[in-house]
Length: 329
Image (cartoon, rainbow, N blue to C red; front, top):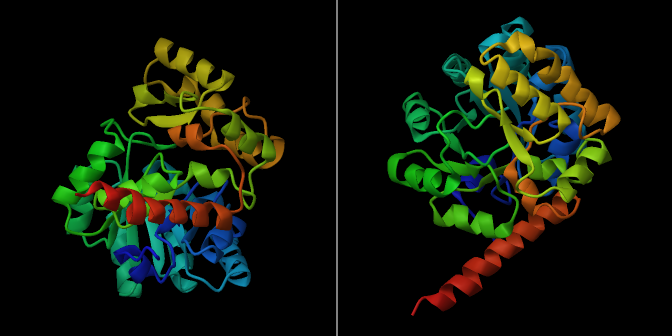
């Protein structure tokens, strides 16, 4: 049995599993491993220091896989100094036709740019509410990645979990969608399909794989942790982020409580270079604020991407072909 969905048909992939864009994780090595395993790997554009570095990373990925892969472009006004338009230009020049976007309403300008350059481009846009998803749908995106409150990173300010969010997507959306946030098991893949999704997006789960570029200390922290080991920071700035709970996040929360909305009091603790050093240099789970989802409660090992995806798909297929039909009388 093979799980064929609108996602697999549109992207030319074998399994309905997407590796979401992640800062300091979404490099060519991981993207290629996911794609070679039959899913869709994504390079994270803004992890690269310059647009030309992104070009080299895309070219490196092509050397590692002949399977479809894409690029994530997160559009955040605060990052305008990174000249996101130049990153977008590289994505187009390199012939990337699958693009995951996330971020501000300014994303719509990039969708127009990508579609004008190549009408066959497929846009997969991440949304944390059906309200935002409907706007993106009306502006012409091809797929929505519905991201529940369980997710690592930025879950938005509406705090809606996936059990409700996915069902709402099925009722309200006309474009196909995939389930993002808290996913790491085959049973969840089967559940996502049952709720109307065309596949799943995984971030944190792919950090704890052999091909992930992240230091082993971080991977082992995810294995040891349970679903209670995340916390929320930046709530007072209305930029909520779900992160791994550690000494640094405790300090951020204390400062936020004392100086709500004042980024200057915590910027030294939440700046991205701290995150990068933890992931790519030290492997220290405590010395920075780093994104992680509640799915860590389901992470018990560090498999290859191939083993992880094939295990998930096999479990989902078993549930759908054996367990569920036996319940229908």
